[in-house]
Length: 323
Image 1 (cartoon, rainbow, N blue to C red):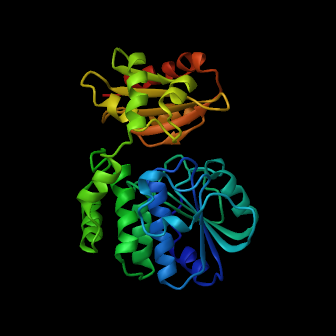
Image 2 (cartoon, rainbow, N blue to C red):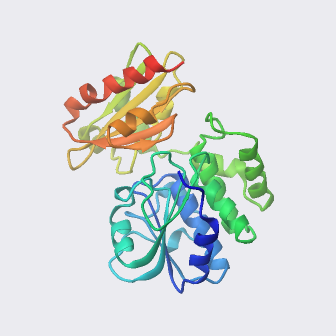
Image 3 (cartoon, rainbow, N blue to C red):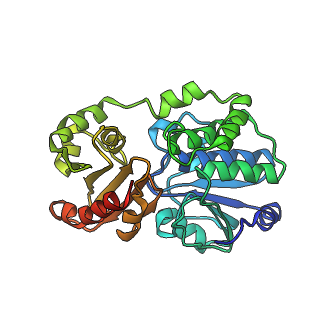
């Protein structure tokens, strides 16, 4: 993988009259954190910037500065530069990405997923980074952009959520140094943890009540299934599983956790988590998805009833090869 093209990327931004930032479908804290952190920084530099993600900003991060400026769809406009944030491939950036790439002269790919396909014209892909917000923070340092609270808060959201509160195996001393820099600018670590990792609406609990009946533990693999009927009964209309897979992997006897979620279109979202030493990204990539060693996912063809048979052999291999 090529070295990050910091200089080329900065030069492209500095010469652009208008810039588009896009992140991935079903955005998590790192996706929105990098989108808003970088967007707020570019606006502080006097740039004209549009921000977009399919479906808009999730409820749990609506309080961040600039969240109200994020577009949920794109059907007009053109840009000198599009920056794709936290998307490992073109499909992951959804309809906003499709439109943005077709109406932008230059595409800059900023990501930390090892499975990144290196799409675009300029690449800042750093697989060793714990989050895309870490890369954005480094880029701002490279371009000499001072941090402000409006920049620091979303960057810390990405750092906290993608490391599960600094608990993933890729966290190192530098991760904590970067977090300290953000806290020094006024970002509140306790508030961010409370609003992201430790916050759930009651409809999430209602969903869990139904789904926990489906949970099974078999030789280190713990699994749960979310059907459309479960989602409708709980009134759950959000992306993801509201942290259920993260809850399951906390089980002492579990080495790998998987949650299958049935989508409106009949496809199945597969969310994966693992204990240190077990690399679920290998299974995710084989299923057409991607992610990190301890947190990955994929979307596979339905029906839900056959998903387990397709996925579990790969997860058994992960457990067998782990330590």
